Length: 432
Image 1 (tube, rainbow, N blue to C red):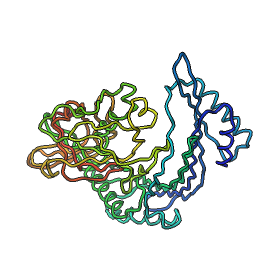
Image 2: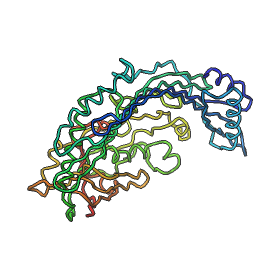
Image 3: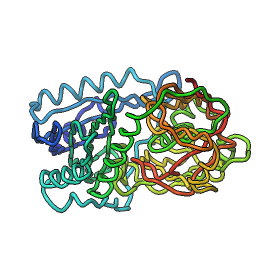
Image 4: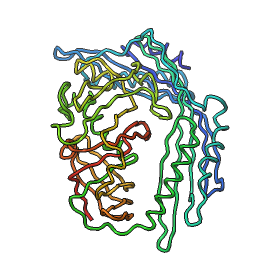
């Protein structure tokens, strides 16, 4: 079918250039209530996305209009042709400044290795289930429910400039719900686990940590009134906090003037008493669902240093906006590596602190730098004892805290980030 679509695109007088993404997806899913299987299903689907381009001149300026359409293997040739023509017409109304599509290179794209390559997709889910329930062993707490998703995606990207690349990837996800009851009300914690490789030990540890946090949440006291206390960000909240720098240096935000970041200048503000950021973008991190060596435009991906000692070394992002800024496209690189800082995590805890473990929804606004969230579980250390607490929220702005923030020496892998295990922030407002 793909060859037929390409032939129709090449023969169409309405289409100047084109890009096709063909994804064949095989998936297996399991749904558990407690430790009992409730549903088992699998499916195979195919998604074909076609982007057509129209190059034209208006008022003496060159433009490249584009429009996207989705095609189905069930469509007839006439239906496909009609969809292509509709997209070509729509593209004439889009006035993006002109840019060149990505072109092929002699470089071979690297395959991202995974243990899921070894056997049929469905054969791996029982191993994942076994790993998860291995730590479900407590009297007062248990796995309430769990959903397992595992899919293999075979992708082929072609464009009118001659790009023709294929690669395979895996995406696994576990939606884990645990609950715990002491003497009061039963509490519930939800954890999302993403992975692209089988790592039984990591799954076991996440389940154990989640159950332990549910235990602490069940014992938590209301948030006391706190002022001028350092806060510690941990787990995926570190990713969300650091995402500010990834977004501010993206070519799309810079081109649209949502970001004033400039290459060669500090993106971390003035130097203070804290650690300076060193950030690198990576095509591959073991187990990350974002690992790949080519992006959706057909741009080959490589390791790229983004920040050194707080100073922006380059912009990053998609082919189109990179050309608008006059920089070489890095492509859309999905993984982030952040170097550790000057202190071990235990040093963060030598004085009073508030360790923020779970939020209802911790968010960073990449445009303004505002961050905050409602606290579901934190550990409050008053200098003598540690107490699990809940309730209240934090609010702050990254521009006010970035010069003095401390990064732990120890690193963690959290999703598509290799980053410090914790970040210590000063001057964050805690609202009870």
